[in-house]
Image (cartoon, rainbow, N blue to C red):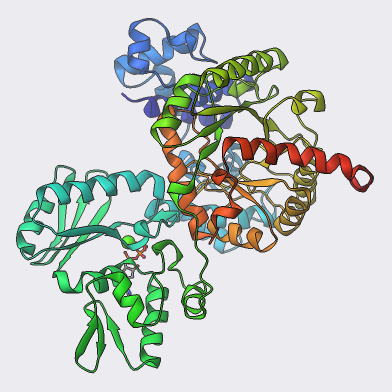
Length: 586
Ligand code: DGT
Ligand code: CA
């Protein structure tokens, strides 16, 4: 029994209790417990054996007993009772993002809707509008939610697939007679969601490679199998396609199978203009192969520089390559720090020295420890005293650390009116302030825009965390005028975060590029709650690369010293221009 299963039961229960109109405090207690169990680093089975479950924030004696019951029996008596009372069709429609228990209760009560398919049909026919409490907008939201859910079913967040894909590549390198092997397709382009894993290998014994591949332990089903290619499905339903090509066409095949399809079409058109034929076997002038062994060779034959996989989306990269204006995008090796890590001071699992050790191991020079601020009690937000203690500990740590330095930061709540969760005197004492919206998602566009703009106009706010609030496949971002946000970010020297938490990737690649046109600076933060989640930094770097960002646009490429100066400068700049800004506020 895993943590995630306990959380799922608690979350289901909270939803069912909400439908049944049970006590809100009990409902909140289940939700809170689910959240904090999710963020607990320790093994809950071990904790249960040691009778330590009550150490988890939000888990009292009663809930600890419930967790023990789940661990022992696989379920919960109360959960089974609730399931008797709430029909399964109703629970199914609750999986639709953005559809809450209140709406679900109306839909079920009035129309007896038995599932998502039925709901979709009625929504399309416009038959929900006249129900009590359901507006035209709700109907639209339901349709969008269903589309989002479908898409989440087919595509997976990159972060859940990439490490596995790399393991498969490593296994092939080690165990199969390949000379070169690489990820291809959307996973190589580091697209935020992927449908399957594409792999390309070169070998002079393709059959042996295929034979090895289909026998890898995670393979549950062989979908198709030929002499030079195979498709399999893993135990958790993920498809992997492998193609094996001869050495002389590996570069051309890698270009072709990396895609994207739209990029390939653009490249082939360029070939036609030059009188060349481009396909997965090579670049041909009449019948003569003029390139194909390497990707560089293929691009060069077309008069192009090497275009990094992340840029191959037909977003102007071929034109820029021809003009010589393709930017040199930031590389992971240039990233010197992580802008957003949670420690055990709030809801993170790691101590300060563990964070520093992980940073060192990743080749980083600094990490900003940004715990939640006081009002976010569910996530262990710090009051002023705790913050002072943390600052003291960080100063002592830095004094004793020759290489990796920590920044004392906070992820500060932005209120509904754009005010911040700590007074300016406290903010001024922090190395870095990352301001974030975690509440009031349904506020209108003007309110949200004002919240962010007002926060950015605070001289001590250095970064806006996950600026749109979206969760991949689960929740769209809140309504907000991003153009205005980018404008003010550039003007006030406020950094916009590329939150690299695998479900966020916020800002997204496309938004980064828009903001970049306005002169905004960016900072990648892993938002790690467990120490190994700092590895998400690589996903954030992927977003930056897909957004065509250069090292100079990223504050992660600054040294610790440069970074602290950079942050201080915002305050100085504001105080020199105080009239301009104080007039505009509010
Ligand atoms: P996905 O799987 O939906 O996340 O996205 P991709 O880009 O991995 O697409 P996939 O797996 O269907 O195909 C892998 C690559 O093969 C794709 O990026 C480009 C290439 N490819 C597939 N179909 C076509 C096609 O019809 N024309 C061209 N030019 N290339 C194609
Ligand atoms: Ca693919």
